[in-house]
Amino acid sequence: MKLFLASNSPRRKEILKSLNLEFSVSVSDFDESSIIEENPIKRCVLIAKGKAETVYLKLKNNGTDAFIIAADTLIYKNNGSCGKTVFGKPESLIEAESMLTSYSGKFHNVITAVYCIDSLCGKEYKRVNISKVFFKKLEPEEITSYLKTNEWRDAAGGYKIQGAASLFIKKIEGSYSGVMGLPICDLYEIFKKAGISVL
Image (cartoon, rainbow, N blue to C red; front, side, top):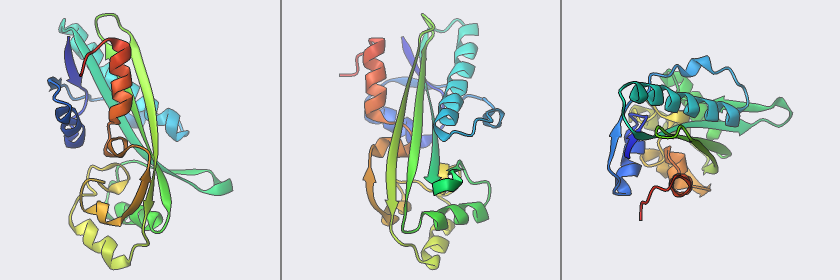
């Protein structure tokens, strides 16, 4: 059975390649804005599920036997009695600047939901990984310099942990690959349940 990654994310492709897995890419055209769920974990799962199902239907119509891997990443911060602030991909430089400023000297949570579908039997698998990322106190000029790298573009929460933003990260509690966008350990557990050998 062929593996299909329902994402065009360079980071997710890089992670799968690091496992020496052969896979194809089938980009999902799922409309993430159609999900109105406010709970960040549920929202992340529903978006990953939507991505997987969109590609599943496309490949099924083509008669392709496939194991589809989809994922979604969101960042959220607890605001005490005020609830949670959820960060997706910033739509502007100003929004990215606001996100980075809010991380300064604090920690935030990175959720990555993995959702897989076996097209042969229709069985679905899901895992959710939550990691804490601790940022150092950021000077305004550091934020300005980082924004000039343009790494914030197309990045959940406005930064990429494997890039220049690593200069700001004091520690991570959880999964580095999960913060990148595809938690390897969780994906491995799904593969084991699905009977897919990767070792």
